[in-house]
Image (cartoon, rainbow, N blue to C red; front, side, top):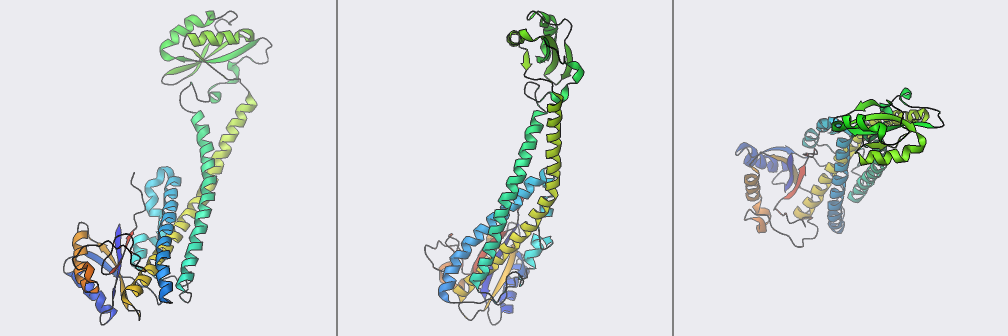
Length: 382
């Protein structure tokens, strides 16, 4: 969802500027829905400071947007199969993002207007840098936990050729505490079951007759036991391989199996325990970064408007939500409406600006009015 944050100098009054915009965009052509964007009286400082701040705010804008999207994307990752609920979890000050920006009110407690513009931008920079640092630590911790759990889950599923088989067998299916005998687990393709039954007793000497038993099967293979003398194990493995039977490297050990199960349940429990607090932290800090981002937009509009329109401060900031398919027409109308502010843009096209110190439009988008785009669609389309 795209919004255009613009400003134009006050005509006789700022209210008149607002009414003129409403008249040409909303009432006459239904080109956009508009709101006044309230920016408090901020400390102007010197022209040199404003020029430097203009560039710094552009960089800070990009940084905060980047961190905000990292938080948003990671919240989507953490929600996993509930990712479709991401947008309803992305709130700012307890309201949806569209409501927040269309009813924007400067947060005096967080960003006191008695402070200089530079100090306010420093407060935001430190705040968001801390969020980025905390996100890195929290995401690494949770990702490692999730990865370890997935590794165990991967071993408990998949092909019999590779998966963990400890949870598929029972103690009574093995020979225990024998000096001479042992039990092997052999993976046999389903199409070779009959072949296995016909051959296994004759693959080597010293095979216990009628000792094979099917203990588990998946779509492609069966898992069979076979008991034999320990001294022929290596020879049996080789002969089995020649006949497309795969002997799994497995020794039945109750303590190790119990430890493996305990590790899985321990990790699963820890993941569940961390999930709730992590989701809450991500939701809160998405809101923090989003509100910080919109305050930066407000700072940028203020600084650019003073640099463009001069002192005393006299401009009206306005938020526009262009109607679908009317972007081009809206841009033409705005350029006509404000063409008198800058003759270079009177043709209705945007112009490349090679070097206009302090105007903050080095991206190549330059219009006769101050303009910033705000896209609040945080959900990546997959």
